Amino acid sequence: MLRSLMLAATLAFAGAAIADEAGPAAPKAEDKPASAKSAENPRVLLKTSMGDITVELFQKEAPVSTRNFLAYVDKKFYDGTIFHRVINGFMIQGGGFDKTMRQKGTLDSIENEATNGLKNKRGTLAMARTMDPHSATSQFFINVVDNPALDFTSPADGRTWGYAVFGRVVEGMDVVDAIKAVPTGMKNGMADVPESPVEILSATLIK
Image (tube, rainbow, N blue to C red; front, side, top):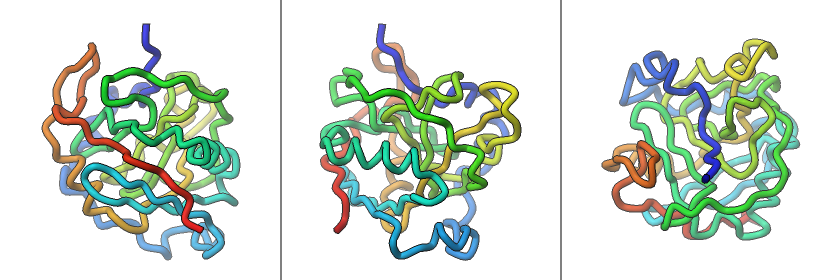
């Protein structure tokens, strides 16, 4: 049985998270910690079948998640994967399945860094996981609205641990907004799958 790393318990509080489909404005640089604005932060170009998305990774605030993401980029793991879960007014998730909905093998799971103080604001990049707080591997999501219900509140359980933000979109938020609006349905027993695959053609570190 395929093990899909999804945003566990997401739909339980989707009412709060999907309140505004249009979403607030993209996060401003001044909303981020000074180190999160550093010119030294690595950037990755995601070339997708719907356009290019450039993400900046917060290596100081989320070193484990950043190293993990870059390891997959270096292995070309994301090339040919899809955004397999798209919920308009919430987030777009990818990094685990190919166009045939075959789940790819991953590296070991990583520590949840949701205690780093970064918030799940529109345009931020965060790690997807199961109800186990420390189960994230390759899958990530981009928030298309502010999602405070996904932020860390306590280490009590999988819901309160939150989802670790480790980057943000710096170019191509219009592409993210186009992806969030694609028609979706059921496929291979999974909901919210785009009817036509939205593919990550390549993920490359910008030198």
